[in-house]
Image 1 (tube, rainbow, N blue to C red):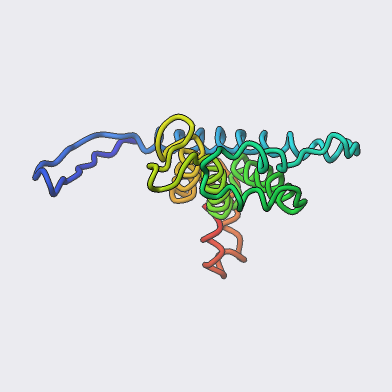
Image 2 (cartoon, rainbow, N blue to C red):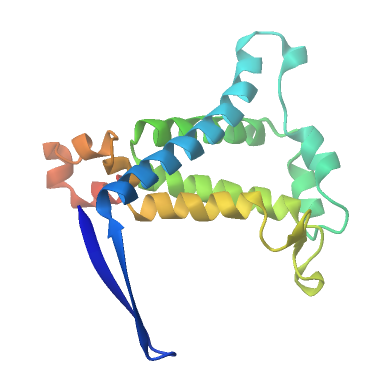
Length: 190
């Protein structure tokens, strides 16, 4: 299925016409959701598995990163250092990555999960800053944009497009009478 789109540029007074395939757009959203889901799930489950083995000496913690890996000059160094050693931060990180990744892989509650995944990525981005606004918001390999910002924007897009409806469980959940009778639930799906 192909659709012809025309974009009007107010500033240039020109229109641009292009063809795109809705089918391929759907597949693209599906594959982006799967790749992003696997990336997050893998990052979370590898941390979570250390707690399952029962050996406290192996337990993953965010403390090392929060105390030592936040770059010098980061305007939030004190904020991140204050969270080091807090078990709730470790669990929020592990479960957030794991559950967001799993939700994306299954295509369930994608809007809700993508939103919180994007928030998590923005926290990671804040931790990666090497300077503040007056320094141009530098990150390790440039200014402003790093992999965390890319992930946050990708997650936002996946939620905005409702990518959980494309080969995901959200399309089935939306047909349930509970969702049909409570339209606000559709805000969590997609």
